Length: 256
Image 1 (cartoon, rainbow, N blue to C red):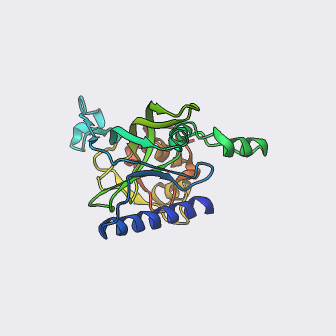
Image 2 (tube, rainbow, N blue to C red):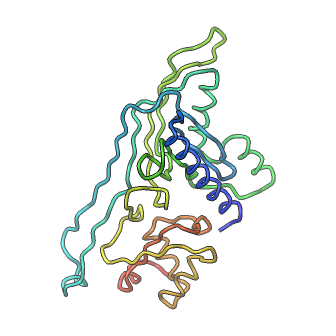
């Protein structure tokens, strides 16, 4: 876990608390998406708060128990990631296109000025969409989720005579990322298994140290990453919940 990522998470939590306090005090705080980690730092606010938010989550029931589970142990049930849809978000003003471009950049995190600078210095570029915070109102009683963008649909509706768009309707589809910010119980996006234990990542934890402590095998980190849908182990952060596969699951994936 890099110092920059920890700092970004701390800034995000502080910002969420401040926004929530302002909303509870009666201030008009618009719904927004924000990113607090480099190279994708940014804020996209909504001129008109959403009139409808659709949240969906589904589970895939097991077909038939495996041979290992016929002896009375629990069967598998995978849970798909929670999806959050905002059907119509309105942007107005001369910064309309800038906000729309920021959303598109978050789908392609290596694009834009920061990506060009990093590439020029041969720095490692991100391969996954950045984690964002969708917030409207206070945490828990309002909406505050860590998400990644899945799709963005933009319809520009009004333009200045110079060609600058000044109004757009935007549709967003987001996948929730398990975090302390969310208000919905969440299994890892790759699907949870009933009976898996949860582990809260500490400041000094790595997937290798977690694997060693729980299985006595540092190579089991690959299986932990697989069942949690973690493609970049360096992005595991303090406070994140990872689910530990049962010992008999270790043989189902590679630990080398």
